[in-house]
Amino acid sequence: MNRVPGAAPMLPPGPRRAEDVPDGIVTRAATEAPDARRHPRSPIRTREALRFLIEASQTLAGTLDYERAMQTLADLAVPRFACMCGVDILQPDGRVRTLGLAHVDADRRPLLERLVADTRGPADPPPLALGLAGEEPVLISPITDDWLRENAVDDEDLQSVRELAPTSLIFVPLVARGARLGVLVLGSTRTDRHYQAADLELARELGRIASIAIDNARLYRAAREAVQARDEVLRVVSHDLRNPLSTIGMGASYLLDEAPRELRDGVFGRTLGTIVNSTRRANRMIDDLLDVSRIEAGRLSIERAPEPVEPIVREVIETYRYAADERAIELAFHVEDGLPLILADRDRLLQVLGNLLTNAVKFTPAGGRVEVGASAEGGEVRWWVRDSGPGLAPEHLPHLFDRFWQANRSDRRGLGLGLAIVKGLVEAHGGRVWVESVPGGGSRFQFTVPAHPPRTVDEPAR
Image (cartoon, rainbow, N blue to C red; front, side, top):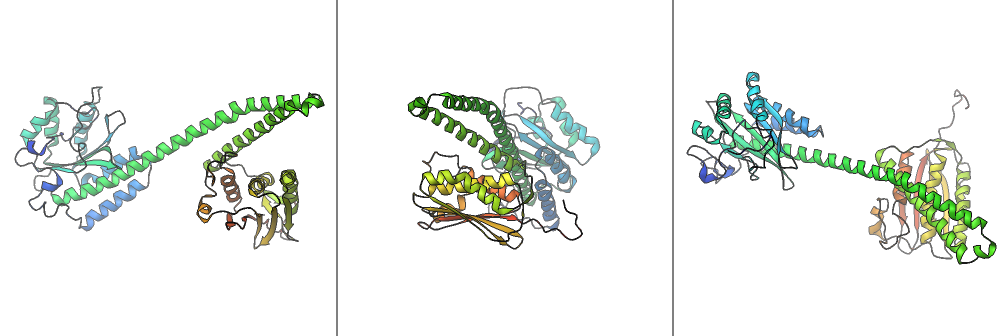
């Protein structure tokens, strides 16, 4: 008989259709008890059962290493709910890997391990074991010797399973988001009591908890792998792409500087100027991508020191004065008198203000006004960049600081990372950022930076 490679035949797969079930074997939740049609799901009522499910849920929720968690699950199930337990997980290539294995009698565990080891050789994918074929748990009780002979792979396999002596079995398919993940196998060797409808319901709930844990762990692993792949791409971009860009930019700048005036003032000069500006823009995009990656990974470098506020405001104003003048935009600033020093990374703070000013100048029409300001609020300094632009629609406000988000999808002048970087840098300083805007009434972006604690009398000057 075919066997899934790597599947634990601790409890043989059994018949695959209800009509094939021999007399005395109960299968499927709808037929496991005489009153099952009227009560297809028996409630879990006992305190012990609830405590068991709570403990299993807490244990599985506390780890994202589902491979180790499945062994923990098997150890929890035995002996509180089963005499033996196996957890088989379906692999992407169709093979089945046993991740959890437990037996109430430690001397019999080697029998389980031997059955698993005997089926790990390569083979064409056979039909999946009972329980993987559907989405409902299966109860088989009682287990007869005829049933064992029918489902054993060979005589050695039959002898091993006879030594295990199961009297009833429950197969619980592990399913999440419509995908089959594996199967939980629970076996009893008790002769005084076989599994009943209530046991089937408890096993169903245990399988649901295990399925969620496996799915969450796999999603987390996939997310980490995606982040690692992204970081590798960014590494290539930052090194392999930045170098040729810098070469192109420096070459164009050199030609522009050395060209005769008549060439600089003509098409030749304008073309070289476009090349220089484009390489600078590309380098800024690379810097933005790297900053977002560092922020998400928690590796952003912030070197905070006591800094005065007004010199920072004046520097950023002078940096963007030319861009504002080109668009006939008034660029002003207002700094409250007597502001305390702030505890900040000067370069990163200039980056925050620069990103906000870039947007303000870009979206403010000619003849408009942009203002940068700062004032004290408690133990913080509140900064703002206010513009007289068109304002923002209310439905756009919740998304402004999302990565790669742009209100105008046709605008290709940036990557949509500027405000996400602003948020990351401000929060790295221990501050917060928000926006106030009314359609037609302009926008005001505000953020806070902690003030530098005043030096006490006993504290030595630095």
